[in-house]
Image 1 (tube, rainbow, N blue to C red):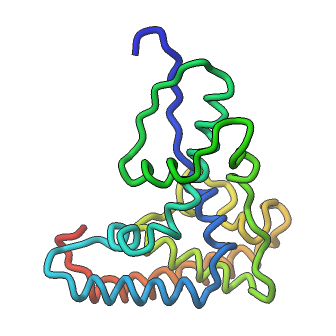
Image 2: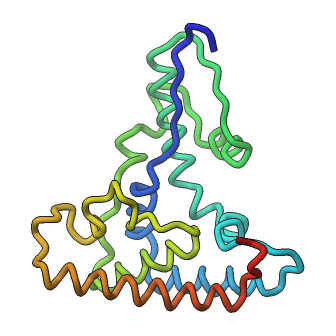
Amino acid sequence: MGKHKVILGDMPEILLRQILGNSLSLEDVKDIFKFVLEQISKSKVPISMHTATIQYFSHIFMLPKDLYMTSMLRNVMAASNCCLVYIGTPHYSPIQNYWEPPPHGINFTQATRIPKRIENESSEMLIEKQAILDVLMDTRIWGEKYITNPFPYINSDITAFKEEELKHFKKHFYISLKKYQAFRDRVCMPEAY
């Protein structure tokens, strides 16, 4: 790359999960989970949950990433005369569709906006939804060591939680996670992992 400036960029997983969690209802996420399991059970080759989820629902799970990268590229293009971009194949067509040269098109504020929490969803419903998303995406994002608040989708201020509340939330998340992992393990071939 010589002396050129390089930007490596992908949407932070935490941001993606908060956007997805507030965009989809618990019933929608359960339906997606059931559909993905059905498709995996029909498959003759080992396939992971993440691969199947992206294959069948890329329009849901990749859309926020595509908008994020489009807005990032717009910011880069606004600040430079020339730019060479390398992007993953799944993002190529969507970025072309969303691309409008600066100053028009999607901006970074729009691409990083987390929708408001779905009305009438309890904290337990949000936790179950995030547990299902963990299984669908084959991640444990809320358990990473760098995460200080495992429930930012409930309250961004960790000090606002009471100790008993945190224990309850952690227990509910763990129970939900184990439940949906058990469903996955009944269907997915071990070779996929």
